[in-house]
Amino acid sequence: MTATLPVRKALIIGLGNALEFYDFLTFSYFAIQIGHVFFPESQTSHGLLWSLATFGLGFTTRPLGGIVIGTYGDRVGRKPAMMLSFSLMGAAILGLALTPSYAQIGFAAPALLLAFRLVQGFALGGEVGPSTAYLIEAAPEGRRGFYVSIQYATQGVAILTAGLVGFGLSTALSAEALETWGWRVAFLLGAAVVPVGLYIRRNLSETLHDAPTSAAPVARQKISLLLIVLALLMLGANTIGTYVMNYMNTYAQDALKMPAQLAFGATITLGSCYAIASLVGGWLSDRIGARPVMLGAVTGMLLLAVPAFVWLNELRTPAALYAVTAVLTFLGTVACVGVMIAIAATLPRAARSRGIAMLYAGAVALFGGTAQLIVKWLSDVTGSPIAPAWYLSIALVVGGLAMFAFRVPVDPRISGAGAPVPPRDRKAVVSGKWSRKTS
Image (cartoon, rainbow, N blue to C red):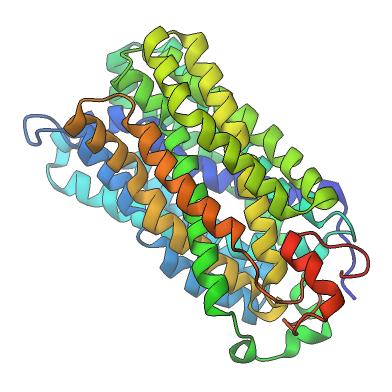
């Protein structure tokens, strides 16, 4: 039987995850500055589009990382898999920070930028599966939702930290200095804490080999096609929502013409709400079930998305920007947590790391990597600043239908291996809620 993990150690695992997300997302928040440095307008007609495209290409290697590192986590252990992903992310972020500009080395600059971005994607693709599997396996009975929510809450901390760093740099530096070298400081700060993260993870205990069922061969652990399809649609909607909200910083500068320091206030708001909403989503899922949590949050976000963007573009004030970011981020994050808890509960233990990693990375690669590029392209083509809201609404409709149809009859018992659910337990699976009787 796996020993339960104290909350403080769960937070330590989450903080390692936060460092990786900080490194990965910082690129997005400095997309305009990076576009000017690596894709000058003298060589490309739209530096921001090229920068966002590079950001998006980093998602293409996330499924590969999910397969390789996620499978490694199922065969060897969650801990070594988390160590590997973190080491790769550290090397990539240092490389990004030190890559010379286009003016210095020509086309080699964007080529190196892309190479390091692909390594980042590979590393992060393999991070989510092992770390989420670790948390759900080591969580005390009745608190699995809350423990999984720590994963998302620390991602919010990463966003908040990136926003604070960006706000500080954009306030302290001139626009020219921020573009020339200021954005590199944000990356170097992330690289500086990599040794701390490696030390933290090195001292964790392992959860994979504690359970007798973990000895079963991975190949025997079947994941149903229905679960795969529904999970991809649900995670896809969540991913589009997350990255549309992450785009609010760039959107404020590009569409609303706000200065960088005010735009970074949206990132600070985003990170704060993301962290709080994650814990709320986990707490609610432990009490009323993951399915009603994710359906309720998605419905609220769908009803508010378009009116919120219309209101924002009428006022065009920092207060309106922060309010829209806060409300939509809160609802979207609660839905994200509910979806991840529901999916993780249905996956068999011996395929959990790989399953979560592949499903999450696949959805993020398909929908997250393209979200900001599509939003920018739609805004340019239609000339409408409301385009992000319509794109988000379509995604929420599709994802919401998938959440409503989520009826995968797999045993949610975390120590089990995916045995068919007895008739008396099917209600718990449909609701997404587990109790002492079904845990």
